[in-house]
Length: 96
Image (tube, one colour):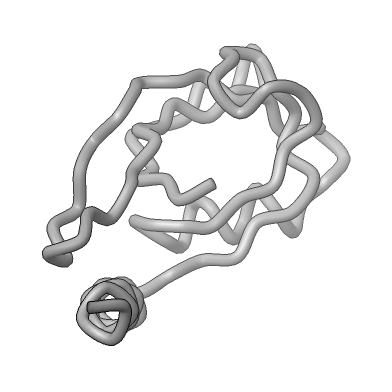
């Protein structure tokens, strides 16, 4: 799932995020606000999310549920996000 990191609630080991999608025209669409859990002993995920505004994350549980547990996070820079937007546009253009 593609997310924008909004903030952390360290007392609950939770990160507040906005789930994002990229439409056919390359626009980033906010879909839903979520609270996702980060295991307190998983310092690499915490560091990745604190160092990144955007990330691709994998969770245990339904991707639309609050309280899903993040098991993997890959931080994205704005440049990397823009590349993903271009890939989406290219895929749609090549389908036609």
